[in-house]
Image (tube, rainbow, N blue to C red; front, side):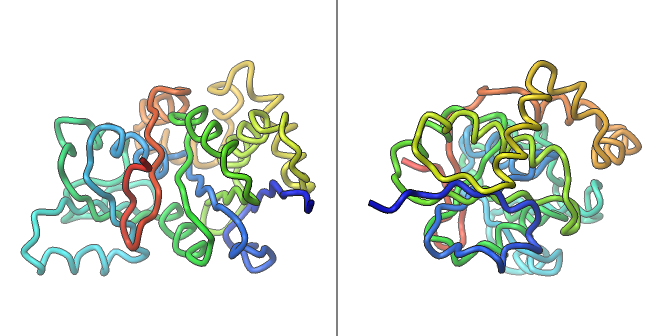
Length: 239
């Protein structure tokens, strides 16, 4: 029996080095896209359509559909759109029953780079245990794709990848070096995620934008149970 692999891709730029066609990909963008996607789907959003470019998101305006359009670049909401990727824009009151078209600086880019995967699901601290419990039942290679920042490594996504590895360590996966490193980082961060991740460069960007509350919210663990999964061009709740 061939041993299944648990791998971490530290940046979307490294994806060509992985055999993603044989893996379940977990897309990770903790600050803030995947956290907001998990929160929105858990709060009853019918679907979230991830697109790579602002222009693709804007094009939906001409279709006459009752969609919410969300666009973020460099941490800020793009002018002319309903909102960006703050989790506080994905409350039940705003998104229940709605379809949202979303483009972000890093998260939707990582998702589109992973499009050839066997399956794509979305991970965040918000749905950590639900996600890991599901992964344990799949008996598939798992690739944790860190969105990073504009194809550069970042700390928060890697720490989350380590948290997933921590929950899956009882299973007989073959870990690559990046998984080992991510798990070691999570061990350092686990006692106080907020303090450990306060040093991140993207955290600093968000502080400059006055959105510290978003950082704190994205570090809540297990406040949602929904697992967003890509079906066609839409992220929907895994059932």
